[in-house]
Length: 306
Image 1 (cartoon, rainbow, N blue to C red):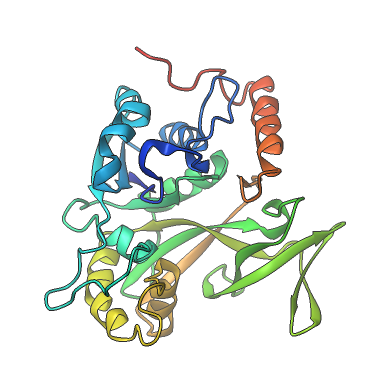
Image 2 (tube, one colour):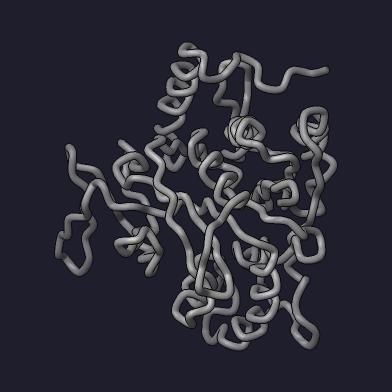
């Protein structure tokens, strides 16, 4: 296998990083969440990181994050652009919202010819997810479908906030740990050792042990071709939502499964997900990284200046 690549979706980070949660220091050495992901990816065997950002934040991003990281792992930048549309299409007047995770990954077309992992910039995934995805990409095994992808399947109970409801992609998985579909479920909240969601006044329990997707994927480069082929079809169906509709990576994967083109192996991880969904989450995340450092899972300074 060619060296595997880590792709980090960071185009949502704002100019000058003012008040942006992705760049909030949470580690005892002033680290941001993204640095822990890169550190874990390097330990797992990834050899390169590609940052998906916006062109207008490139200078700041390099100065604050990229230039230091590049001393430890090969880095590259691609740019998510609202106007990067198929021939014959133009951005709807008034559209300022990014086109979503599908278009973000499509920005890598022509830049990747090797298996790669995809993560969000502002999520902490833990070491295990990177290891199982790296190992899968190195040896995916046999598959009767055209494409064989993977995703890290987190335990729902390990991804909930103590401070409010969250949206999670609850996975329907068969007996062979193959993904059937993802049910994007809003308003999931924790009550003791149980999780619930409410719709139309009816409360429904969701098993605490349910596997969920946290947008941590493993792909071969063919996903980029599929994203390119299907983008125009998405744009044709904007309908009455041209300013907010998003081209979402999980929805494209779901379509490939339904069409019988792809098989997606769900790789179990027991690691606890961290993220700053609510302002109150920040202290919990800071305390969690302090505890992981105290246990020597991470050094105090992940990427000291060389």
